[in-house]
Image (tube, rainbow, N blue to C red; front, side, top):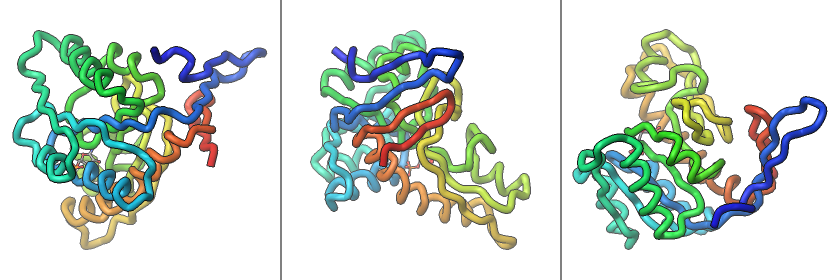
Length: 225
Ligand code: GRF
């Protein structure tokens, strides 16, 4: 069903591996585990007409995720698919893929989804999974990135939206925004300013992906607009 969605070709003469992204199906699947403020930013961008997309489903691995309520309040299908009922990660990944495919999702947006996704998920949505991470990758991958930047004494941190591959916080970078670390910052005050930028650039990165015309050359994401 998805073959032909991406034109992939290996450059001759040893050039980088190139993937070209045509406009994709505008049905979004948003995966969350908690508060859902990035989900809310996407909901708001769609409602305001800044993002031409439809959120087909919001899926959380935790029943108590506040983001599920945000989805319901916006009239979006909100589903809890717990990882606990599955024997291993691969089985859980396949269940997620099935739920997303059933709803004809074209682009998966991870928004505070606290589970690692394995090859069967990543290969089901090639170059069609985005994640938002609260640091300027490749600095400070993993958990609690804002505190890591603060504890390291970084002068600048920020936010990264990137394509997801099988490595943690490592796929090609679509957009980044810097946030200065102030002398009197706490991890919490820094996280709050980073969050403002997350909400600003995540919908923008989704728009770029959906509009197509971009390409990935090796590690480099080159926007079409
Ligand atoms: C955000 O800081 C995001 O960058 C990180 O997890 C947090 C999720 O927050 N991946 P929210 O659930 O979107 O409010």
